[in-house]
Length: 164
Ligand code: COA
Image (cartoon, rainbow, N blue to C red):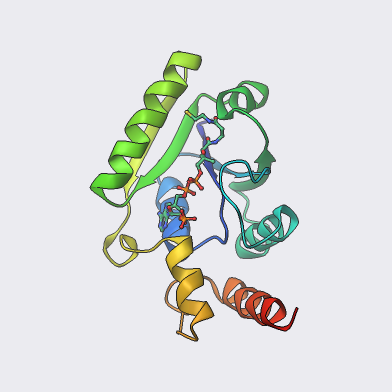
């Protein structure tokens, strides 16, 4: 059975991420979505529990999608999980630079790990979680950018923040 780990911060998950997972399922039997726990990498709007809950409600009980989390180095998580393939989406040339560094660093750390890339499809190529959060904060419509459940939570979160 072929398995790939799709790691990220998912703050929050977008339709761009969803597109990569759906297409990844045409290539792999199972995709493990691995949400990074800590905030070391970047400051998040949503807590770890909220990001996990949104991932779970987006994928429901999809038979071939597992929602998991990790802390620390990705290669250590892969080893514990006994998975050697990472799935990543590439949107732009800038992503390529970043992914290039990460892929080679991961391979220096763990020679058996391979990264498979998918080009993010047309409409989603310009999306990022930060951009979506900014649009939502300024009252823009993000319904074509995030799943409906995430849109609801994003609006609520921003409302709570304003009222805090
Ligand atoms: N469609 C739309 N947006 C996408 C996307 C897609 N297909 N793919 C990525 N993005 C966006 C994300 O929303 C995110 O936007 P943001 O920066 O505005 O929040 C941005 O692109 C990058 O996010 P993502 O691809 O999810 O990666 P990440 O930077 O959140 O996560 C880790 C990177 C967690 C995989 C990486 O840092 C890691 O492995 N960390 C563990 C520690 C480690 O092992 N370090 C050594 C690595 S060599």
